[in-house]
Length: 315
Image 1 (spheres, one colour):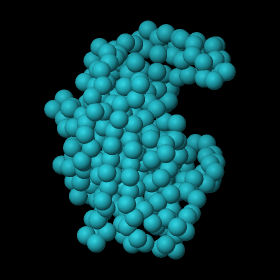
Image 2 (cartoon, one colour; image 1 turned 180 degrees about the vertical axis):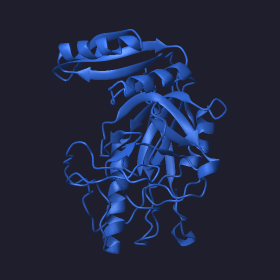
Image 3 (cartoon, helix red, strand yellow; image 1 turned 90 degrees about the vertical axis):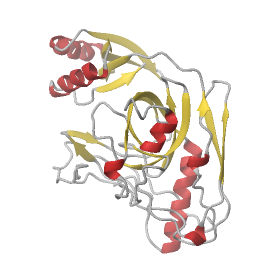
């Protein structure tokens, strides 16, 4: 997933993490100038087209407010030295990750809620394949976060907005130097490929997004690509969590009630109200669920019962 960096374009970068008042790590990147060498950054900046996994559509987009809790897994030997979705070469010993919809590359803060370890990783691939996972980390990332042996962890994933924008701008500058365009999300609906590479039919609905190509800069000469392998792993207090399946979220209570009734053969669903800004929303959840195996099995049943937006969360 990461392309080889040329020796003459070696980056002298430092990374510092500091714990804030809410005990969460924040990243501070400092990049040195590397001139106009177009090979300094690996791969390309890419948002990508809508695509399908097991009948479910995903819509990549720039989302600098992304903040989600769920289950993370890891991948390594079977993919080592193979290409990532943005044209890098995957190195299982780098601190990287695969995400279904975030731009590549972007930076995210990952907190292992089970043990309190915090790490900043770079998203440079698409995945995970498993429905109940929100992030697939490289083996080294899983080691640093302390769950390589267990295989999965309850995590919180937060995009680092300013640092991710800085990366996007650097790739835009590199692309401008090459005289090419940065790969971005489409303006109109398009046919997509599944992650497995099999052709997929067009999306069931029209997707219209504004161009997410970062603004070009004729003066970008720094490559803000941090040496994430050198960062210290931060420690915050572990958090007790439970697993739930959120089958849907609705602006109308009667819609939530209908879904809840339809799921009665799977499990006892509850309806809770939350406010998104000024808008009340009614979410339908089943849980808490004791084991990950049970949660995966139940999630599959719920998706097949006609709730394709159902997801496994930790709370």
